[in-house]
Image (tube, rainbow, N blue to C red; front, top):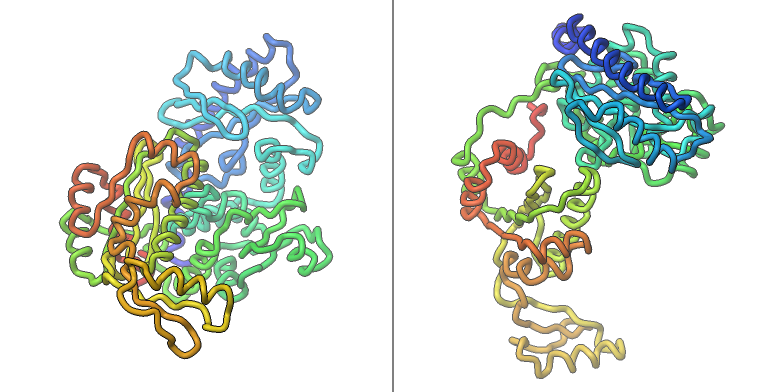
Length: 468
């Protein structure tokens, strides 16, 4: 372990007072749950799960996952209704909110610690689990059986590294490496540096890790799990790819960052610094380039985070494809969202305003009925500027461009052609706005979000913060 890693580990390893606080909160919540379970006369077990149970958590990240495990014979529907009711009755006098995943659960705030209390079924085997929640206890047990104290510290280093390069988290917003996947990488490669060495040297699209050797060959795995950049077989459920959420970009970012870190270790990989940025800095970045920046702002309905991010990413791609269809050349695009009220599609175009005419290439003169249809369409069209004429073997026409401005195009086509039904209905009711280049200042000032300024700065600069 080098000096950089030693310094990082000192920062991220939980302190004794943190451990004591977490244990005290767990005991308090557990006692309340067990008392209520006893009142109902139900057989159930209260267990700590997640990174704290596995002792792979990071200092300052005090998120407790407490599971109430009911007998599997009671069934999924019972857990969703009656199982949740028992938890609610036990904890309703505490500061709480009802959250939703595959079924409802309780989120507490205890001494500024977020505590998720989740009902689940207790199965005998992981492959019996119908939900991610039901499978979690098997993951906890497996990791605890495989990692000693030194390996748990290596997991911490790898988690902090993945956070630093922006690829930690299996949620759609990130599409990166989950905590469990990170732990499995250390089970496979033993240390942080060895993991990075293998990632840098061996990983290519379609790379396979099968820790428990469930499959007889790599070919068998690839036939089963197609079109994933990384395939990591779940040791407790061989029908599942733990790395299914990892996008090609996150996969590639991990490879590139591993290479550069091994060449030149730096704290910047673990704790990237963007520095102080202001609206003035953002506007200077925008005005200094020869491309155009378009911000499409839209209100968002109240939905779970993964649902919102899934909708936004799909609809952003739809929006970009409509722009491409009308000849706008895209440099880059991304989406920002506060997950409460507002989202912004950020699109960089070579030009947001095109020339007034466009050359349209038609079919070969001998291809019927296409050639006849092309001539019929353009011979007497008001949009025709010149032609049709023959260029080599094809009919060609010079015509008026339907949409010169990207802003005008989206004002006319966004709702009808770019948005899925959920967003479409919401936007039809609440509207949307488009800002281009210097107009963006007005929106940034109105929004007043430091997070958005940082996001926009990263989008404009593009170079990863760890790449020096």
